[in-house]
Image (cartoon, rainbow, N blue to C red; front, side, top):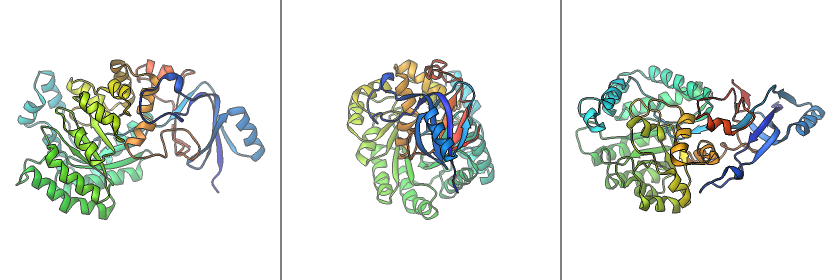
Length: 413
């Protein structure tokens, strides 16, 4: 029998509920319940409200009470909609060269860049990838990230991409956090492929994607559209075929050159991620679309590049999620809360906008609507900070982490 449990009291509970998916938000829009309790049943939330009222009900109906001592601010578990945390090796050499003024292209030409990680990931056994991924996921979980998107894309052959996706599946089986797999075999055309980019994408469609479907390794397909990867024209047939096979579509777009967001909108993608060079045309187009723009401030910080125009996107009426882009090259930090807080400073985001971007709006970027808000029927993924005012979270620029975490209703920290 699944027992009901009351958790609390929380000095403040930010439900992140009853907020629009698109557009700007003010802090006054936040639903904040004071002296709050959360009633759960198994892995789901049943009810929120005044702790004393819920405690009286719990006593009467003999529910378990997980009573907290001290002052806590509670929010939904954070969601990272964009990571590359399945990899082997290190790119510390690349980072050193970048600090010396070398460009991304120059570093790649000297043997670094994505190809360096591809080589090391191909050499790594699947079990090693699984273990390293699980360790990174646990670190993310301890920072309050309860749902983590994880991309392949460092294999770039059918066998190596399947190895990565199986490693993600196996790590998910042993991880407390939910790991959501995405196939990014269209990360770049591999140097050792004996054809052109269009032929490589055709190979993925004819060989890799059917195997992914058969093993149910992922339902999300990503492609990197940029001047250093695939052109919008090359990507079009790939995206259309993947959509016809039932995959959700994601696009790496507008990082160094525009065109990716155009193709994402045309193809009906769930999200388009990066957007550092998006201009007024792209912003207007994204605001009119249903897809979720995903900013990746960690990449901007790692490369010393401009941030995505988050303020302009929100003011135009677009949605906005934030991902860590945790990867060995451009975004090695992997700290979602710090990165979201820094983006908020530079883009003048309200605290409500920042928190929405790593909760329910990030969930929408993953096409998940059972998390990201604390409300009846959603997953009981909750984080609590040792504050009495939620504003302290962003004010401290994300460096202070949750002291208590519940995943699927179970306290894990």
